[in-house]
Image: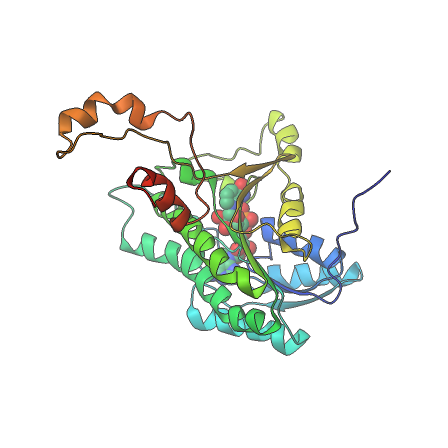
Length: 313
Ligand code: NAI
């Protein structure tokens, strides 16, 4: 018995940023194959975010239409607020609505302290964080009005610690706070907001820190296992109307799908009446950091009620 429903997107309009290459391209192809009308956004610059080229976005649109799908190219820069608004307008103008925003566009400027300067931080935040913020914000009123929307943001497991790409890890961390908070805001409007942490070999995988990892025979097998289209089923699921998941972070790639969650340890409760001392903190470090019995707060309110449970209701 096959109980799997056919997840289709007929009548839905999706914007996928950075869809001219890599993961965004794979997401756009899958959504289009399943019936969505897709705005293929891509500025077409280098992986460091320099320059522009309409080629990648146009190529993907050609690929989609050749396969019988419906798509339009958009070359707006999501690193600029007006570009994000113009991108959403492309969807509304061309297809009359906007149901899905996949915030995927990204750049990678490897640098750590003290080399990672203000320009590095600004450009990285502009594309990853502000691009997601402004594109989603531009789409938001349409989604609220229609009482429906699906927003996907893209974080990175670089958040676990990526010292040689500090601004990138910083921006990706910020997106988790954005996703979690906006998911609560969207819930009553029928809007779901979730975050994907992909794992695939694309342009940024070949960096100064990891010199051309695609050249050896061993890497051929790895390349297959790390294909971009192995990430897209998770993105498409989160983009579907049957998906009620909200505010979650999902890791996807290499044929594995997993939940990444933010947890808090029960910790140590200082039962004394006075001010806890530094020595008390140091002396109870094991209990403070013991992971057993951890909880996964659904919101600030949820965390508050657990962290301060000893104070009573
Ligand atoms: P990619 O470099 O192959 O594709 C990114 C696309 O975004 C490019 O086509 C680029 O032209 C476009 N883009 C960049 N800045 C833009 C802007 N300002 N406006 C519009 N388009 C812009 O990289 P990849 O790997 O496909 O990355 C996609 C997303 O996935 C990024 O957010 C990246 O940080 C994230 N990611 C990827 C991982 C991986 O394993 N490949 C791991 C973790 C996160």
